[in-house]
View 1 (tube, rainbow, N blue to C red):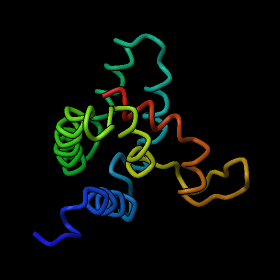
View 2: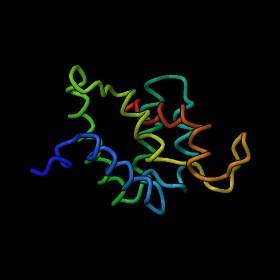
View 3: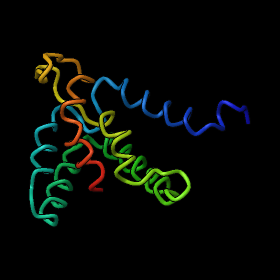
Amino acid sequence: MMAEFSDPHVIGNALKCYLRELPNPLLTLELYGDWIDAIRVSDNQEKLQSLWNVVQKLPSANRENLRYLIKFLRKLSDHQDVNKMSSPNIAIVLGPNLLWSPPTLDDLSGDSTPMGLNMVRGTNYVDIISFY
């Protein structure tokens, strides 16, 4: 195996780049409000049900990709004692690449780019992803 492909940072950056370059985020712009509403539910059991309901609304291709990604991330987090990638850490790193707000909204700095919006709303994304 070539040295650059054995570095886990290269693989992680490739995954983030792939997700970030999708024309529509994996969790979809259309469901952005549903994701935010679901994560704001206070009761954990109801929150889990709300998140599951939103997952069911995803297009089938997105749902299947999410399923494989979650399985992979679960295996990654199983080795958190070595790689330091706990569920919250994974969510911090990948969350903004899985869901971003519609580009018509402005964040507090006036930057309406998806990445600018992600920085302001980052805790919502972390909550959604780490709750799995």
